Image (cartoon, rainbow, N blue to C red; front, side):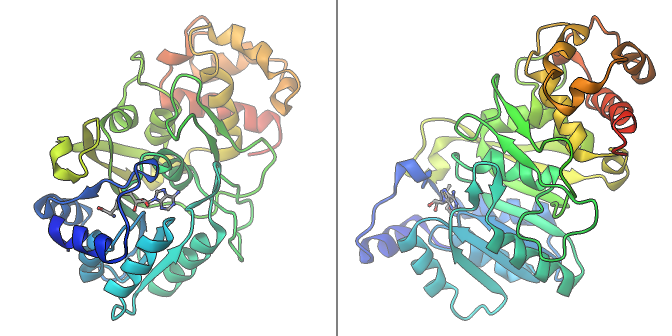
Length: 336
Ligand SMILES: C[S@@+](CC[C@H](N)C(=O)[O-])C[C@H]1O[C@@H](n2cnc3c(N)ncnc32)[C@H](O)[C@@H]1O
């Protein structure tokens, strides 16, 4: 792991400076780096995805404990530095790529690397990273809801997680894609231990009713559990960002996620209702027109089956209740 001076030296020797647009705020507190790695409890048969490896500082720490590390770095100069720093680590693959092929899809090359390594090692897939602010939320959304693009042996019934968000933050106007009718959930992360902007971490753990409760909160709540581990002041990064950050965890709970009959329908449902979060549930159903969900005529029965008051507002509906609504719809659409 590299000190601030080492990072500065590596950048200077390549004639580079931190690029603000790419969120190049390097974590320079090595104790915090160690804390995140320890919290992830990485084992020798685990595959770790690091998004934005920078000069390879955190990657070095991950390489000490993981069975395999796959790192994506968008910046060509930084990727080259990281490759040099880790040239002797055969179990580390650094790919100079944008982690997002589109805003809604992880880079197929990375997904293939991860799927292959996971099949070889048989352990968990973990996202452990100091995430770039511009891509972090989309990356996490794909890894919670599933990303299948690029998988050669896509499991039957797999679907792609497709997310859209303003500047990578699924906020008020957020939308999660993955239309009804897509196959398979593909690759998912078993756990995520990441550094993100504090507000993103707060969205991940938000409870119904608050203004931060949104699509990411619902997806996470439906598939597992998140916890804020530590709030980080700007001073632990170089250069210091303008906002506070947080270390946050997500642990997938297989039993919980398995209740979702069809992830694609679930996402459509969450989109439909949370797109109008302050209207009544019943009133939101008219916006289904034109989509496959528009064919559903007995929303009253669906709300009954799910135990949801049709006069409730979506922003107060629990993740589990959205799961029940989506499951009832999946049955009606023959997509269970
Ligand atoms: C917050 S820095 C983390 C750097 C280093 N891992 C650390 O912990 O200090 C985020 C890194 O992500 C890279 N990055 C930004 N957008 C990216 C993208 N879409 N795909 C891959 N890497 C990206 C940046 O170039 C930068 O190196």
